[in-house]
Amino acid sequence: MARTIRSQKRSAGKGRERVAGRKRGAPATLRRGEIRSVTPAKTRGLEIPRGVSETDVEVEGGQVHLTNLEKIFWPELGLTKRDLLQYYLDVSPWLLPHVKNRAMVMKRYPNGIHGPFFFMKRAPLPRPDFIPICSIEHASGNIIGFPVIQHVASLLWVVNLGCIDLNPWYARCDDVWRPDFLHFDLDPTPETPFERVLEVALLVREALAALKMKSYAKTTGSRGIHVYIPIVRGPDQKEVWRFAKAFSRELAQRNPQTITAEYRVAKRPKGHVLADYNQNAWNRTLASVYSVRPQIAATVSTPVTWEEIERGIKTEDFTMRNVPERLRKVGDLWRPLLEEPGRARLEEFL
Image (cartoon, rainbow, N blue to C red):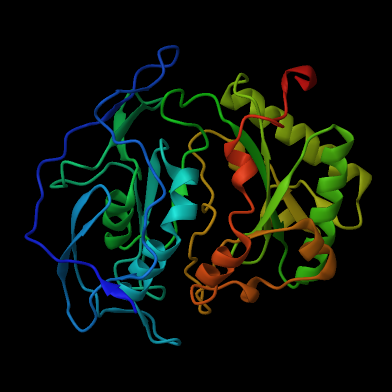
């Protein structure tokens, strides 16, 4: 039987900065003792109250005030904001290790998938004291304090802002200039079948394997596939981007009938799949693993095995309604991206 989360009095403060960012050459540091280490959240069976418009809940990390719970976010499915929050609560044990210690760009849909959305970088005030902040200096000289999803409480707080998907920084807050993975966003041109995206994903895997790089795939939750490669931190963001660009262009030259590296939309050939390297550029983000997407079917960006890609999958196979159960059955297929062994070294290719 599901347990309803115990509601308590609301607790919010001005929000102390917990992760400090510095200029390039003096990367952000994680201050010990100020952020609790993340442990697997015991969330199975916990249930956000139904039939109320707002509530205060006590979860790992602190107390969160949740609002507009009955607002419809997916009209075609009848799914509410409460359903979205419940999904993220359910998958938090698998999701949190992938987003902790990373600045989070907020893409807010306050009125659901069909309403206008807007991007937000700076963590809004007022906010609870338990929200960690990763401060990053931009080229303009502005220092922006991004929120960090470090535990269940900060996760629910960010989602409660209307963030349907999560968009974390490509590097951790202790060194925001040095990514620990590179990725390719395989994006089909209009009217290109998804089967071709799967075909291209396998070509990308093969080319990376030739360089002795192990890769991992997930659905984007939209039209494409994301391919990630865990790397040893060392090369800075610009160097990682340059490698990704050269790789994509070489791949397109070898497979001119299916792959393009042309970033200008009007010049992309029909029936091709873009091997998008530019998402490795400064300040770009991709929807995280286990992110719900603002699509009619409430699809989720979900890790898949290469065997599943070979057999054939569809984006709609993985939704907000079935991904929690899939995780309980197969576990986190992207766990290797969190581990040190097996990471590729880019230095020899730069």
